[in-house]
Image 1: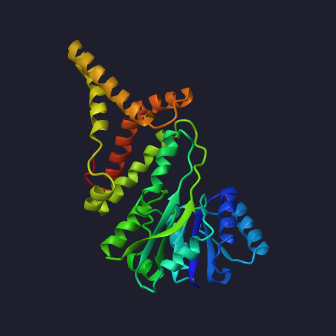
Image 2: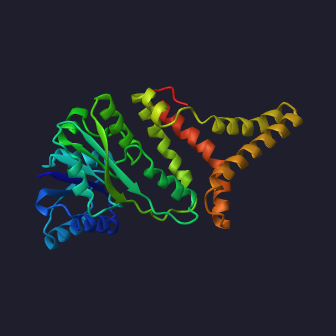
Image 3: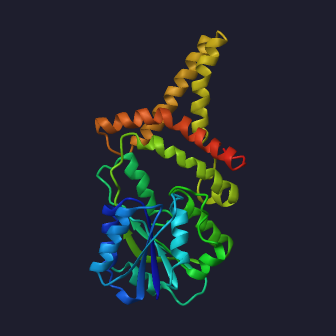
Length: 320
């Protein structure tokens, strides 16, 4: 077995169907790769779908499951630990691998015991895109993402694989990336492509996205230097300034300093306006989207700082 493809999923058989169909159409020899679908928790509908797909197609497909929801990191660990391939290729259930994806991965492999590969992710977006689409578009320029990466099994054994404390799909790929770097395992760029369509998101999705900041704190605790080098070179001082300006308004009024309150309020409005304008500068100007950017730009600084400080408290690290 040359390559094992590991796909974490949970209750999204419609998306998984597109991914498996693309893997069925691979130009790579069908007997030389296997597909391991790992559900993050019991999922009868997906298990049944995979069973039917396996029976209808001449592919080596296995379905595994965690006993309870533990996050995609845990699901991936179950997958690669049971894999039979020399190389472990990771992708997501909402991607569509190019027909030559596995072939190009294998072409890049020169028999090394310890090596990792990172391929290209293409994200189709609207013209002009929404703010949410622009955030997903960052996958195209990211250094290392689990939507399209491959490691030898020996490399995963040496690094320990994914840290299961990352309970959602956020920063667990950066954590593996940093483990590979710290273990001096080469990471090669190859021309292996997956398409990552943007799923429809609810209005105000960026508000709920701020909770991911918990895991920024965990990643920073583990790799403070690499975090500042590769993720964020400095704290989000503009968020802190917006919060301080907002809080100064009632505080100045309590001190009977109306002029200071007006200045603080004006500064807050200016900073929020700049923040919203930056998010709109290259994105859709539809009325609905503009209103979403204004409302969420008011809330994001408070929520982002809250969740990052919650993460700092939870993981006992000084993180701004």
